[in-house]
Image (cartoon, rainbow, N blue to C red; front, side):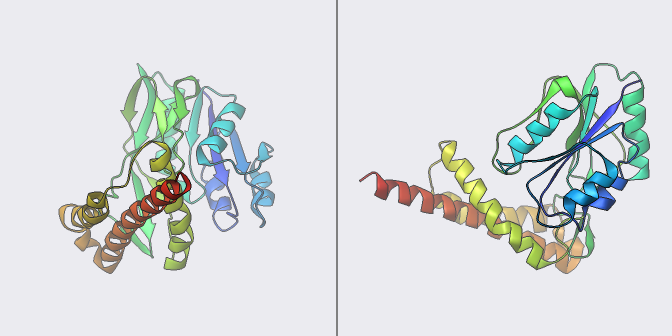
Length: 255
C-alpha cells in the first residue's frame, strides 16, 4: 500500500487554510511551507501537522521544491491553500495510491473554480485539468516565477472527480494578486529571452477575451463570466505592457 504526502505553500492564508488542511486530513503526511505569515496561518497549520517550515520567500517554485524535499512518502499531492479536496476525489486518490496503477507515475484531475460568488463552468476554466498527484521520484517543479507547474517523467493518468478552487471572493482580492502576478510574469518573459512586440500587446489581450467569452462560452457564466474574461484580457495586456517597460528600462541602462 502506497502512502501519501500533501504539500501546501502558505502566506497569510488564515482565511483558507483550516478548510484546506481539513480536506486532506486523511493523508499520511502534511508538509506546510510558510513565508513568514503575519496572521494566524502558522498556528492553524500546526493544528494539522508538525511539519511546518517557515522560510524567507524565494518564489513559488523554490518553496514547492523545498516542500517536496521534506516529503517521505512514495506519492505526493500538491494543493494550494484556497483549494479543497472533495470526499469523492479523496476516495479516488486513496484508491489510486493504495492499488497497483500500472505504468502511471502521476494523475491529473479537473478543477472547479468559485469566482466572485459563482462556480465558473465555462471560460476555459472548467474542467481545467491539472496534474497534482505524482510519485515523489517522478516529479519536479518548473522554475516559472508564476503559474509554475509539475514536470513529470512518465505516463499521466486521469481521475474522474474534481478539486474545488475558491479563488477571488471579491475584486479587491483579485487585484491584490494582479499587480504581483503580472510583474512576475513579465520578469519571467524577459529572463526567458522574450522581447517586447507591439503585436502581442495589441492582439493577445483581444484573443484572450474572444477565446474565453465566445469560443469557451463564458457568456453562459453570466456577469461573472464577462468580468472574468475582461480581467483575464487585462492581465495579458498588463503583462506585456510591463515587459515593454522592462525592455525600455534595460535599453536606457545599456546606453
